[in-house]
Image (cartoon, rainbow, N blue to C red; front, side):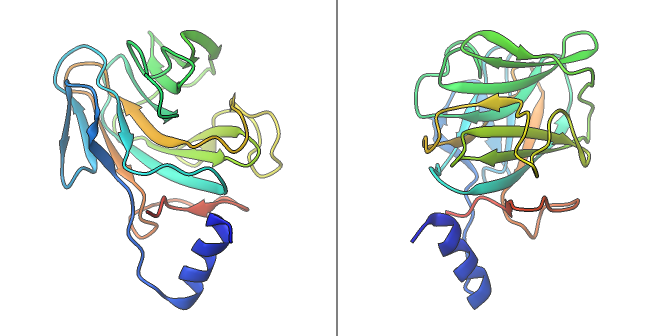
Length: 203
C-alpha cells in the first residue's frame, strides 16, 4: 500500500496520527530549535539549515511554514539526505526559496538560481510547500497565492527533482535571529487545502 493510500485510510478510520517536525540530530550547529522542535531560529548569520525527522518518497503533500521573523536572507524548501553545503540549495541535495535580496525571492539548487519570482517574504507570512514526490515537482504558495506555476494542474513547477526521491522538509533561516515555524499537523495548518494534495507530513 502506498504512503498516500495509508494516510487516507488512517484519516477515514479516525486513527490518531503523529507528525514530523524538525530533527535535532540533523541540523547545522547554528540552527536552534524550540517549541517541541516546531521552530528553528538562526543563532548566527551563517547557514542554519535543518531537516524534518522523516522523509517521504511518494504522494502529494501540503506542508506549511510560518515566517516568524523575516530578515534578509532566510529560506524554506526541501532536501534529500545529502550534504546541503554552505546553505540550503548550495548543493544538488537542497532546494531553498530565499528572500529578500533587496526586493525579490531566489530559488536555489546546486548553488544556482532556478527562479527569481517578483514577490518578497515578510514577517508572519504563511508559506505552503507543495510537493508532488511521485512526479518530482514542487511549488510554493505565499498567503494562499501560488508564487509561480499551477500545482493543481501539475504544470510549470518552480522546482523539479528525480521522481520517487526520498524528500525531507527543510529550512535555513540563515540571517541571525530569523525564524520559521513548521506546521505538519493538519489541525495546525491554516488556509485552503490544495486539490489533490494531502495536508500535513505524518510520521
